[in-house]
Length: 122
View 1 (tube, rainbow, N blue to C red):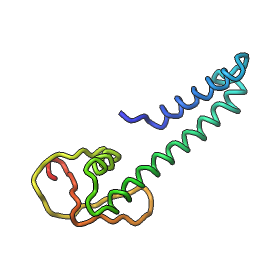
View 2 (view 1 turned 180 degrees about the vertical axis):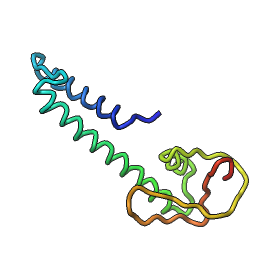
View 3 (view 1 turned 90 degrees about the vertical axis):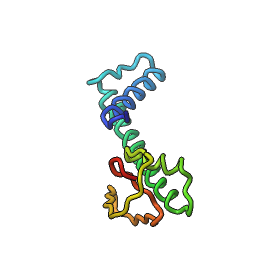
């Protein structure tokens, strides 16, 4: 299961505390201390935000890479689908319309040869 934002923030803040302790074993970086509140916690927030932005950018680039190819690599498509908790299953061909929502405003082009999975239908 993917790490939640809160879990990621806690992990990164602990890493910052450990780093500060290695730099100065005498430093007090426990929760509530001045060094925790002014150094470890703000660094944890900053780094967490940067990691989330990077993960989002990677996910968005995956869409562009798959869609810019005439014959996308099946592994790349599976990786892209996994970004949205979708797994590919073999099924029967279907036709119809699908609505795709993104978190940011951008142009999204899906070729007519694309395969989408919905429930038990591919």
